[in-house]
Image (cartoon, rainbow, N blue to C red):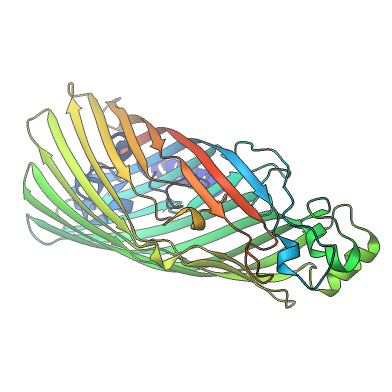
Amino acid sequence: MRFARVFITGLSLVLITAGTSFAAGFAIIEQSVTGLGNAFAGVAATAEDATTVFFNPAGMTRIKGQQVVVGTHFIIPRSDFSGEAQTADFSAAFPSIPGLPGPVPIAGSTDDGGENAIVPNLYYVYNPENTPWAFGIGVNAPFGLVTEWDRDWVGRYHAVKSDVQTININPAVAYKVDDHFSVALGVSAQQIDAELSSAVDFGSILMAAAGGIPTQNDGFSVLEADDWAYTYNIGILYEADENTRLGIHYRSQVNYTAKGDARFEYGNLSAAQIALLKSKNFADTNASADISLPANVSMSVYHRCTPRLAIMADATVTFWSSFDELRVVFANGLQDNVTTENWEDSWRLSLGATYSLNDKMDLRFGVAYDQTPIPSPEYRTPRIPGEDRIWLAGGFGYRLNEAFKLDFAYTHLFVKDADINKRAGLDPTGENFFRGDLVGTFDNTVDIASLQLTYSF
């Protein structure tokens, strides 16, 4: 009964708040507080607690009896923009139409687009005594992001709000082949729920036909869509001896066809102008988008050097090249809304150490290099203004008694300045023509504070 109450309470927390984050790309690695204290070094080999369900379920064979882990991560990002924006050069794009203006500066704020978030996760492992089998389940948010800019900021035609949430339900089973090898298989049901909004420069769209004024007749668009998809993960754990182990873990790609609706607001436009826009399909409609979220492979090593000191390392590659574009298809025939991404596969490399002060207290340290998948400023957007980052992490674990353990971790991410170079061009059918130029730099930082309770029985 105690297990049931703990599990149901934790599950409710995850389902209510899962999936909002600000991460490299938009994968969420914040799935373990013990792992965070080591900058997630060695997580496919450490198998310290039930969070191994996510990082390598083969590690469940090291958990004795039953264990429940409930964790919460408080993510505090900041993203300040400095730069400028302007509309397309209409006179050059439409030389046959006299009187059109050249580039018009886009005025507005350059506020902080980072949004604080809470990312919870929940894990349960059962390893029956005297059997080679172990079972577990994780409920977490493997992908997600939240950025939100003011509706009047200078890059409003590229993005205002981006809120992508996922919920992943991941049962897994592990088998201990012998004293050295364990293998595991997990399957996942994963939901995505997305809201993407931006301002629309209806003044520029209506300029030639209905007297619109560029940047002065803004509308607004909101897309909301969701879907369920299914995926799997496999893991191998090799225990060379009682002090050294190696882990390899693979999590497969997730393919969604998210469906929902697109809504438009028309601002200060006249009834005639709104009627003209609706005749051109700028009207509320159903919409859909195919989204492929990447596979990844982690390779980890753990070694206990002395009874008090353990060191660990990890290399993870995430196959972000599957994320080549974000294309929204409108049911009423409006031209597809396309954002070319052209992301590349990216690496995350980490080193960590754990030092046991005594039988009750462990201290953790870690550093990581986290490579951005965004290839160049031309493909960076205000929705995900990420860059390469260095993680500096620390934390501790305290055993309250034989059943309960409390863990805390804190991490600061030093993020390289992220340049953006979006150009409108002269092609009226181009994806950025009515979004305009956006050129400048994002100054980003991220802080993460996390708390975890482990119950063993």
